[in-house]
Length: 526
Image (cartoon, rainbow, N blue to C red):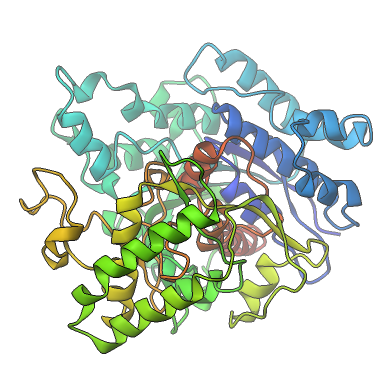
């Protein structure tokens, strides 16, 4: 029987990285990775994390029907109220795993977090790993551009630049066999006091105790790039920063998500020979497209903001006005006009906006690779959760209609600001300056999706559904599909909070591939 490998999950968000590891299953039928503690400060993400921790209590055995009943329920009752009486043991274990409530590293919660982690690993003689990534707002290109616009902003005083030191403190405490740290690609070029943040992080991760001037044993780590060919003689710091970038679309993830992922392995545990390339076995020659992963979800319409009543008829009337505005403007392409006409004719079919639970009498087949199909689907779930279209301004929906018809005729290419006719141009004085060239972007049916980020919570303009007859932005469930969350993964909180959780997460299926690598490394001989 395989020994349990305990996981400490930091900056966990809704649990994407932890989900990939905990769902990893060996041929013998066991789940070797078990999350001992998950640390997350945001309340809605913590609720999502705790619900999933409850679900994981049943790995290897039948998930109770009450779990699916909760997902189908539209009541305001909380998960704790729903499950604590029926399954007190499992709910208590889930709460223990997520530390009983939201907790923030680098805050007054420090002692409580570290005490809980110590309790969870006390007496454990097996292997341990630490996973997670510090928040990326201070490192991302968008975040840095935004910070420059803040009067009086001083990078050296932004505590978010140094949250990685909290990660170091946990490494020093746990002294894991392996750790996985994830962050945005922008961290490669971020600097403080003229010094590369990423190079500083790499240097500190080699020996956390030394970097912290800690009194604990100085455990040293070798930092390995997951997607780079590994040759034993190339170890010991010879990799370049760019080698640590993983392009998720190369590994069957249906989005162009490029992230920095560091794999740290204790030097005293390194095997004599490393097993070739770490992730190469899972490289895909044919990228998975947006259409492949969301085309079997129930069709929805958007709602109309600032409109009363906000019903199907109001949406249909607005759609017809939009059609009259865009049809002649699409004359550059017969295909584009045909798309608009077909969408107009299908507007007689009454669609709704979906909701927390959208039942499906029959779930259409997909053209997914077998791995993704098995990863998403749950035969006990006859429908979809978190599948609700948001409201949009009437004029924006006209632009969505134009953009989706345009993209379908242009092999998935979205129109730039210069491609919009005057009668569809937003009333922004900067619209023609070139600063908003790609403000509206269609997630094309036949292409890999753009990176899903927390910005999807703002307005949805960058995440327009490719189907003009639905004329809307993507739902939380569609974004979750692109991020490879299983269909039975429920996101708590309001819709805006759900979008943020999905956008900030690590794709669970990518994490599952990384878990295979980590398991393999941990089970090679020294």
